[in-house]
Length: 290
Image: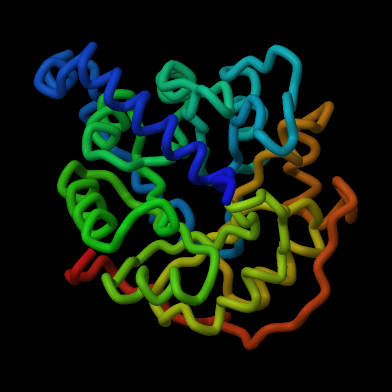
């Protein structure tokens, strides 16, 4: 059987991490003196009134190819901030997405919004890289990790002062996230096995997310109507990347998405209903397996 897209990415990721660890051992990484001393709360940025947008800087994707010709990190994140983004996501995976930690460092230097390092994290070394580059949060993909590794990376990330977004794609993965007491869960509407998108995945899983847990809907969000419907069902935030990266004016596109104007930004739609979590109080950070 041929490997899935995720399996291919993870294989290359492990090779790349091993190379970087040889070139810059973790003790040298930590002694570089570049890590910012002030952290911004990614979690708090997403749990204020209304629904928040995490605006993503992503150069390309395996499914979509190049998203924008010669994108400038500083220009794009400036547009995102003016457009109303609550936080940023910077995709740092290189071989498949053309990302880098340098993109994250540039974003950190240019903007005060909290930043998520979006990558395929499989090793504690990547957590230290994220902190040194200025990330405020990291992504852990349940599908990419066995349970002991997931729990260990989550704990180490929190000990380093990073918020952790735990990403799930189905009920089994959500159960694993719930088992450890994750307080920030991303429901990815993209199936990482083949990169197909189904926005209804968020609604199908939402009712099984415990009260007090902040939910981020990821991938396929392109219309103000989708945003309103997600907010009505109790979703705290959405992560939007390709729609904004492809837009000729990302600032205007983001304003329209948040304000309800520009009903259709990229032709995607969502129609199914789901039991509401709206009004569920968000609990403060709690102790647990995660």
